[in-house]
Image (cartoon, rainbow over all chains, first blue to last red; front, side, top):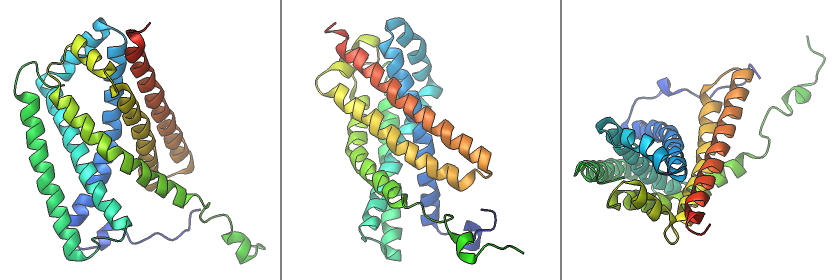
Length: 130
Length: 128
């Protein structure tokens, strides 16, 4: 197994911002796996009754907790939108360099707008939001 | 000098013929998760309050337990496939990689089982 050929590694290429989106897809994917773990813990706490729920939820709804939730939501939005890009490529659409750059810019802009809306919705009141 | 033929050295080091299946399931689960994720995000942000009664009532209402079960199960499946690729790319060494892959599998199955149990418990609590 040791002497198998490796494909050219990342440092070989000149950096372009589409590559940043590519690695961010992985980063957000791993982050979302952790977020699913947290979401399941929250569901479990709710299933164990009001007392169990009351121990976990105040931590989630503290300012750092809310910020973490907004980051998870932003990761979900980005991963979802960029995932649609990947699905389009799998169908053979949007593979041209200009198309890939344009769709990358669109994903970034839409993610920023949606993340700003999530930030506003989470912090609009003391008790509201999830 | 090895007495093994070049063909014998090359065999069984390549594709196990399951790569396409992995790739395809990742895409199929992604397609299923896209609308589920949008629904979950909007539904969570639209919750009027975050107290126990409001949240458990929302979880148990109508089709919500079914959709949430799909989020947890398909989400865990998709995450397991994705994390597997990340581990295979970045964790080197046979033992470390095998342990990381096993740990990832166990955690993802645990998430799926725990989430499903929690949802059933909440959804059926009113009917017990």
